[in-house]
Length: 494
Ligand code: CS2
Image (cartoon, rainbow, N blue to C red; front, top):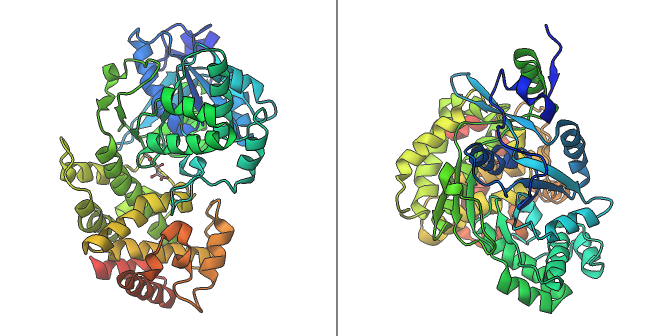
């Protein structure tokens, strides 16, 4: 076999003989977009849309500068340096076909971990017109039950009193916007691309709470000058596996230390309110609508909630991936029942969308056997996800008199996993979650108080005070603790 070629700008002509590569100019590129949180999702979604635009000869002033503000971002920073910010996107089709393409939309990367200045300077630069975010649900720093900004976070306390030493996204955004205001530069748009209902409104509310506590005059300016479009983003992007890196090397002769894998499906629905211009994304299929609310709700309550239903029930059963769950007809039917009987009734009509088609397509996407999306990725950070994805549907159905049994079994399974730390065979389950110790502690009390887990108000609100819920939940917990064979319980319900 020939020696594999390293992915970098000077080798693009050779790499381009085996797969599509960027044909546009990347050198000294103007970075109109600064993006915080360059995970796999950003690289498979927003950066891919921009790459497509650039391939069409559009949007030349809209290069992306990635920003890392966490220690974990150092790895990508170093790899990007080596690879001139290039990476391969591997689109995995259900029939086994894999389409590789080198993406060039990201042209720079700044790390703000030890020295925040390069990041603040880049965000305050006149060329920056949009700061976009994929900082995960947990990154917004709100109390899930009240929706208020969490001032107790020690990093927030630190940066509130040290405006020049930001640590979280709020400290960085505020420092950069302060500088822009002082220099009489127009504000940038803040574009949230996270799975939170009204993500732009949420980003605005949180940033104004932070900035208001630090500098009320600046907060007033931000409230007036910065626009925060809401957006619904969608593309399933599993964690990259070693096998993906090896496949690229062995089949295509390309060395890429961090390719990104994703499904063929992609969707982005955005509100058209950008205070300082935007790329003509509509030319590559992005939908601009006056109100994203119904689309966001549909996606969070069906796709993301559906993922959590499969992930948590799959974890307790011992399935490793989402497609393995979908191969089991009990799981597939249970999921459809949850969607039809609990999630859909509280969604209402969505203009231009046939919800039955949407759900049919979702089931096919989840079943894609080539994607191998791990149950571990889906279950991670459930404490930040479930209040928005699933618990909200229970609250709505309690108010409307709708069914709650399918979603409630998932909460009982979530409690069981946190209490026992094992699946039904006693095999350990490791789930990353910022609230692990609180979850484990509350779940551990279940044998003396069957409602202990759902008494955590910051996650469940006042569910523990609702009689219909407590009856259903206690029943589910008792069944599960008697027999952890989750599949049997699911089968009885469909
Ligand atoms: C997943 C999402 O972990 C999760 O919550 O449901 O990452 C999901 O894959 C994306 O939102 C798809 O757009």
